Length: 95
Image 1 (cartoon, rainbow, N blue to C red):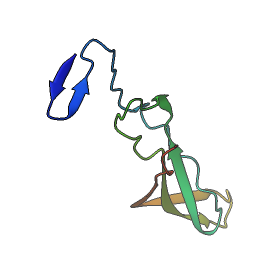
Image 2: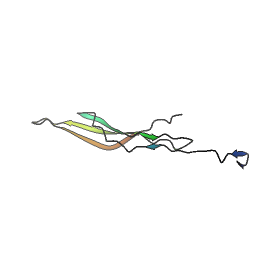
Image 3: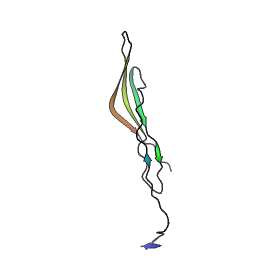
Image 4: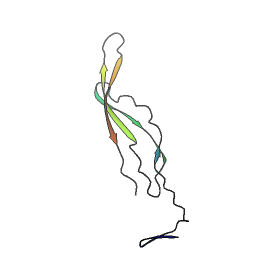
């Protein structure tokens, strides 16, 4: 045991501070609109939840806008364009 000021700390007790660890980002989803404005998303997963006061998990989902167009013609092909504005969503920490 070790005493610092009014606090006594058991230095032999295990205390494993574990930060959150997440996977790499997955692939962007397809645009959810065939015409007009839509959204694309991508996610990542928690590999290790934080423990004993470790760092909280970062954002697990990103969204970005996309534009879907339908070209009328012989092939009636679909063209999707994604803009580069990324919106992130961070869930509240679990208590």
